[in-house]
Image 1 (tube, rainbow, N blue to C red):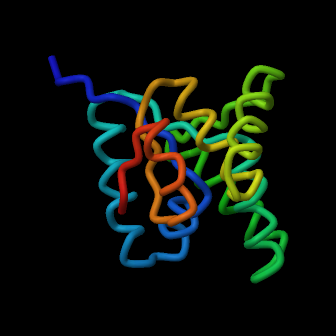
Image 2: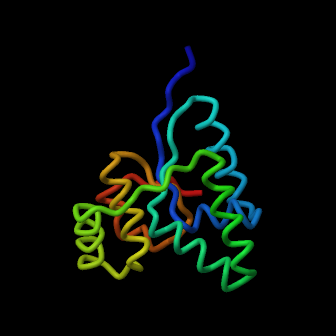
Image 3: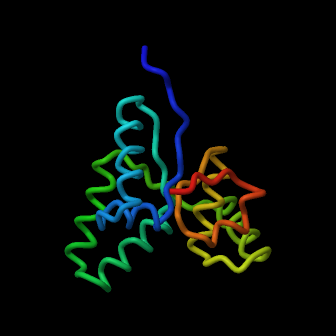
Length: 136
C-alpha cells in the first residue's frame, strides 16, 4: 500500500505558476503528481479559484480562464466552498494583517484542513506563525 502523504492547500499564486508554466510551477506539478500517486487531496478555496479565473480572463480571455479552471479540477484539485466559519477565519486573518482578502481565504483553508499552504507569495510571511507554509 502506498504511503499516504498529507493533503495541501494551493493558493492562487501556486495555481498561476503552474498554469503559466513558470519555474515555480514545476514544484506545483510535482505536488500534483505526488497527490495523484498517493491518492491524497489538493485543495483550493473557491475564492482563490475565482482569483485565478479573473486574472486569466483579464490577461488572456474568459474562454482560457474557463479552460484553466476545468484543467485544475481535472487534475484533482478540490475547490472548497466558503462557509461562514471559513469566511470568519479569513476575516480574522485580514484584521490582523495586510494580506489580500483572497489570500486570507487560502490561509483559512490551510488552518481548517490542518495542512500546509503551498505558495511563493510573500504576503503569507505574516501568517507563518499561524499556519504551515511550504514555500516554492
